[in-house]
Every structure is written in C-alpha cells, then in structure tokens.
Image (cartoon, rainbow over all chains, first blue to last red; front, side):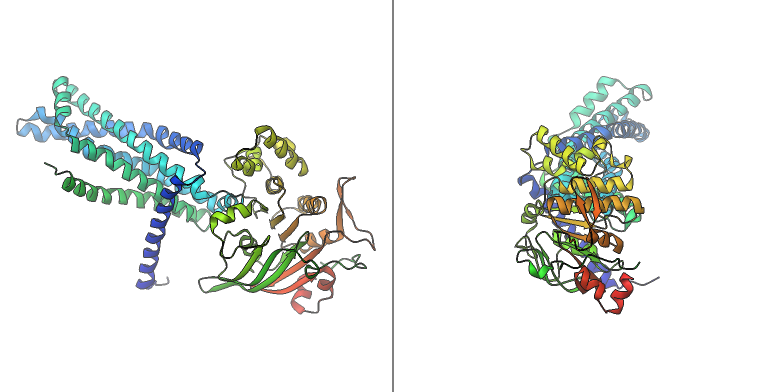
Length: 260
Length: 282
C-alpha cells in the first residue's frame, strides 16, 4: 500500500472544506437568482418531509417513552416521580427531538441525495444537464436544501409532540401517573429559550444534511464504487457534523439567550 | 480494415477553405495533476463541416468535446465556439451559448427519472414560455427524425442501447443547434444498430447541414460517412457514385498522446505516409 504524505493529506482535507464552503455559498446565493425551481422544491419536500414522517414519528414516540421509563427509575429514588413530564419535555424539545429527527433524516435523505446525484454524475447526466443549458446547482441542489430545511423544522416539531405523547403513555400506563399532571408539568416547564433552541437546531441540521448529501453526490467519481463511497461518506459526515454542531450550537445559544 | 475506394475526383473541401469557423482550438493544453492529457491541440471546424476525431482510448477525444461545450476549462490556449472565446467565459454566459450546441453523450446520458418525451423536450421545457402544443409538436418531429415516435411515454430503462442513442440524438437536435457534438455514438453497439445511428448522423448532416464534431473508435463509421449521403426521397443513406462527391465536407483529426498528428480530408488520410496513421487505418 502506498503511503500518503501528511502534507498532501492535509492539503486535500483543507481543499475539501474550502470546496464545501463554496458549494454552500452557491446553493444559498441561488435562492436570489432566477430561475427558481418551485415544482422541484415541492417534489423534494414531499420526498424528504412526507417520506420521512413514519420513521420520525416512530423514533420520537419510542424515544419519549423510553425517556419516561428511564427517568422514573431515578426520580422515584428522590420521591419526585411526578416530575417525569418536565424531564421528558425539556429533553425532547431542546435536544432529542431535533437531534434524533435530524439523524434519522440524515440516514434516509443525505445518503439518498448522495446516491441519486452521484449516479447522475457518473452516468454523465449532470454534464448533460449543463450541456442542455441548466445549472445543476439551481435545479438539483438548491431545491433539496430549501426542502430539507423547511421540512425538518416541522418534522422536529412533530417528533417533539409524539415524543411527549410516548412519555405520557408510559407515565399513565406503566407509572400510573395522572395524565393531566404529566401534561401540565411538561407544558409549564418549557420557556421561550427551550422552544427557540429546539427550532433553531433543525434549521441548521437540515442545511447540513442537504448540503453534505448533495456535495458528496456532485463530487462522486469512479463508477458505481464511487457512488457507494459517496453515499457512505455523506451519511457518516452529516451524522457526525450534526452531533458536533449540536454541542457548539447548544453552548452558543445558552450563552446568547442567558440560559437559566 | 482497408481503406475503401473512394470517389475522390472532386476535391473534398478542407477547413482552411472555409472562412467562418464554428470551432477553433489554438494551442489548447489540459492536464489532470501530472497527467498531460492534451498538448498544444489546434484545429478548426468550418461551418457545415463534419470532423471525425480518432485516437486510442485515453487520447483525449471526449475531453475535446467537453472543452467545446465549456464543461471543463483548458489550462492554456484559446477555444473559440461560434465566435465566442469560451476559455474565460463565465458559467452563466456559457449556458446561453450551449443553447446553440447539441451534444450526444457516450452512454446517451438520458435522465432516467424522466420519460422519453420529457427527455427530448427538456430544453424546451426549461426555456419556459414554449406552449405545450408546440413542445409536443417538436418532440414528435424530433422523434420522427430518429424513427422512435412510438416510444414517447416510455422510460429510458425500457429502451435498448441503440434506441437510447437515437433518443439522445433527438434530444440534441430538437432546438436545431448550429453545432452538434457526438461522443462515440456507436460505441458498444452491434454493427446493424451502429449503421442505423450513422445513418441518422448522415441524415442530420445532409438534411440540416449542421456542423459536427464526432468522436469515434470505429474508422468504418467515418468511412461510411465519407462515402455515403442521405437520399431524402428514398429516406435512406445511399452510397456515392464514382465521380460524385458529398456536398458536406468531412475531415479527420487523429490524436496521439494528447497531440494532433493528423488533420485533413479523406484523400490526405489515405495518402498519409505516417507509420502510426497507416497502421491505424489499415
């Protein structure tokens, strides 16, 4: 196996980051340049948003349910089982709703975008599109970015809600808590900062999912093997970036919003 | 394959005799990393002329077509297409110029998520402002030209390799471009289907007099083009009679290791004393 020089390795990585940033700038700048592909945006919103609904609902519901179950064990020791609603609510809205929804959508759509655009790339369909006078960034990338950001925002809200419902069901059926107490606890604990944080994150993560998926797809080379590689890389990179960015966004928003 | 006896009594016009060039390459060079793919490539394609590009695999033939289309940029040199210097042209301006050029890709490159109709109509649909009835009429006309009108609602996956190439030709000619680029239109096809494709290329050349650059591995395709013309009344390609010559000039360009080693007409090609060329055409 040939050894790669560290300088060359670093250069390639820096070049990739630079290319990715330019790619993102172009994808956003296209929002202000004609033509606009509204039909493509709606189609993508349907594929990404409606198509991801079942997995998002299932993930959200069972995450909320297991949160309630796990929390009950600890809270019971302190005689505070009634606070389970607070815990599920704060965890789901601030953190688990946006992050798990994003990870699910990344697994489904970031890899999907990479494989779809990658296949188009290696079969010269992207070149054909350019040859036919269409900018693939405008036609393929920007609609996917807009659709993912828009739909992930709503998917995260749905995930929060079904997560709370999952926690509520466990609280009632297994922990024998009063439903009204659970829901009022869950509702009253939320403050503006929680909601704001929970809604900012899916917007950022949606942008990461779509741009990473499209970036790896548009840079796929080397036939079907290249498409496979792009798909895996898109899935891994978007998931890792979501988790890393989550930490920094949380820390930043806590500082900016003067969190309690 | 030996070079056929040709009706060469009348001189076949060469690029130099045509004042208005559609494509001009001036000392074009292109490298990928340390691999120099094209070196000082210079040639002209006159209006109405068809030029066949030959060379072994990896000699840079397809890259020349992509350079003409502005899909990649040269490292040095100048490329003029339809009077525009595209070497430094912005992508935004290139999109307008590409509207005047049609390209048939090596593996057809049809959009597999669209039907044949949508593929052929793609450019018209993107233009906006073209009515559905007009799109439908022109799609049918283009598909009739390649004799595939019945495939209108099929998906590319349902077509054979040869049919896909024909649909790709229909997609390229629907806007009646000034320049056509064919990237190995007969590559990987059986001889009968290849002949059908060449007949369509000849038909487009003789009926619409479109300038064209054609990359091919098959020398016999170019010889067929040089020795045949399209008879519109019989609606088929017919062989030229001795003494008769084709109205549309055909020239040959041979690449070797990224350099142009031959650029001329069929007579010059068959009379070449270069050993490599002799071996190539034998």
